Every structure is written in structure tokens, then in C-alpha cells.
Length: 70
Image 1 (cartoon, rainbow, N blue to C red):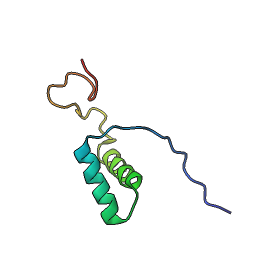
Image 2: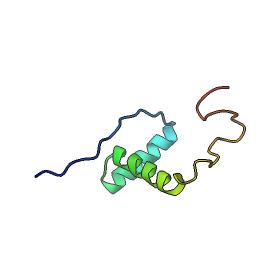
Image 3: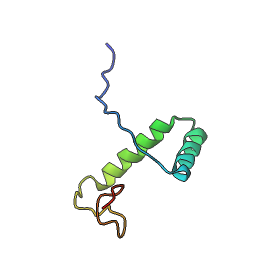
Image 4: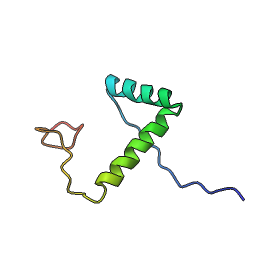
């Protein structure tokens, strides 16, 4: 019997060129996909901060959600 996979959700993110290049280099050096690197980063972030929904994640002086103009 085949192993069942967890349901996944697809999303789109925009990265600046420096972050994209750094993540791509990590993926190539580790011989894994860029998607795998990003999933691992998200998983670690959620593990570290998921229990603290009040964690202030906004950039200093942004006044709103990161990525949104106010």
C-alpha cells in the first residue's frame, strides 16, 4: 500500500534578488530543490514562533502588514 501524502497548499511569494540568490545557492550546495529549502525554512519558523501568535513580526515603522502600503 502506498504511503499517503499530507494535503498541501500552493502559494506564491515574491523575493528580492538577494534572498532568491541565497536560497538558490543553499539548494544547489545541498543538492535539494529550492522548494524544499523554502518549506524547511517555513517549517522551522512555525516551530519556533507558532506558539506565540502575538509575536511582533512587522518591520520597524511599517505601520501595517509587511508588504502592504498604508
